Every structure is written in C-alpha cells, then in structure tokens.
Amino acid sequence: MIKLAANLSMMFQDLPFLDRFDAAAEAGFSGVEFMFPYDHGAGEVAERGRRCGLEIALFNLPAGDWAGGERGIAALPGRVEEFRAGVAKGLDYANALGCPRLHLMAGKASASTECRAVLLDNIAYAADLAAADNVEILIEPINTRVDIPGYFYGTTAEALSVIDGAGRANVRLQYDIYHMQIMEGDLARMIERLLPRIGHMQLADNPGRAEPGTGEINYPWLLSHIDALGYAGWIGCEYRPAGDTKAGLGWARDYLNSGRG
Ligand SMILES: O=C(O)C(=O)[C@@H](O)CO
Ligand SMILES: [Mg+2]
Image (cartoon, rainbow, N blue to C red; front, side, top):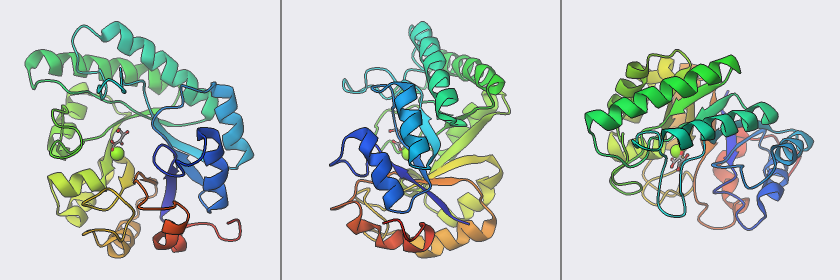
C-alpha cells in the first residue's frame, strides 16, 4: 500500500506551520514530514500531530545556517560540537513527536579525506545515540546539478559508500525520486535494487519540482511498481505545488483517505 506523507515545509505554505497539520489531515493524509520543527516547542508540535491523527514520518536534524545557505554541517570540520548539540536536540524532538526517522545532512563540502572522516564519525555518533531511542538516521543523496551544487553526495553509490563507511545498522538511504531522476534516472530498476537499503522515499516531478503530472516522470506507473515491490515505508510529497496545494492533489486521490476533505 502506498503511504503518502504531506511535506509541511513545501505544501500548504499559505498557512502557518502548525495549521498545515490540520490542512494535511483534511486533505486525507495520515502522515506528515517537514524540514525543521525547531521554531516551535516539541510539545506543541506533538500535540498538533496527535490532535490531527497524523504520524510524523521524518524531519531533519538541525542543519546549520539554512538562511545563510548551509545545507547541513555533518561533513564540516570544526563544527563537531555544534553537530552533536543538534543531534541531542533532534532526538529530543523525535522522542516527543514519536518520529522514528531523522534526516542527517552532510552539507556542502569538498570530497576530501578530512571531510569524509568527519562525516563518518558524526554519522556513527548520531546513529549510536539514535539507536538507543529506536530512531533511524537517513542519508539522502541530493542533486548537485540544480538544487544543491557542492552537496557532499549526489548519487546513491556515494551515499551508500558513506552509509557503509559509518557501519551502523540504523543508518539507511533516503531515496528522493526527484533528485535521483536528475542524477541517475532508471528509477524503477534503481528502486528495485536498493529497496533493502531504503528507509524513506520522497517524490516530486521533474523539471520544476512540482506535483506528479507536471513533468516527465510517469508516477501512476512508478507508484504501482513501488507498491508491487512491497515497499511499506512512507513517501513524502516533497514538492512545491504549482498552485493551490489541495487543488493540485488530484494525482494522489487513490492513495489518500477519503471523507475528510
Ligand atoms: O532537499 C531535499 O530533498 C530534502 O529532503 C530536505 O530534507 C533537505 O532540503
Ligand atoms: Mg528530499
């Protein structure tokens, strides 16, 4: 069964963050994901999720100075103390929100031995603390052609080599179909091959990163394929709606709860 999570950092942006939970539930979602909950108290985010009957599928560990252009700090030498403080904060929120997954972002860093060593140490550190709380750490290759030039890993092979290097069983691959269409293509076969390593998925169409049906990816076919493969995890709708979020959800009708919207 395909389980879609609304991405509350990109969808329903006309509403304040906490009200996006209500909008997602009304639209028929049973799960949500978002980038960062940290502008709000963990208690109020947890309470809103509970009240709306929503599972919180994933959010990001603190990722440095986002507004200033940083996209994670885990591969940055000299930022280890800040990274560790972020892990503690992320796990506090994950526990309060009942969220079993955290996305750890490497950042824009050179492919040097030093950055790789810092990254592997940081992932192992985060994974060991997360394991004690039954939380998984997710590593997502992000396209370096359009969205984040210079990001530490842009392909599944690079991300898997980092995961293997860290050597922790609770570190898994976050497969974002949009990024991987740009970097690798061959989506159906790649997902089939990588399925045992994938802990979370995300989607958007390409080009433009809007909803399925606005670009080149055959989502009705691909989602049936993912379903037939037996993928049981969440797929986050990490797209920028081309217009009104709810009006653009026609593509998802078969996968959402009915009767609430
Ligand atoms: O960019 C993405 O794709 C993500 O999944 C985010 O968590 C980071 O921007
Ligand atoms: Mg993503």
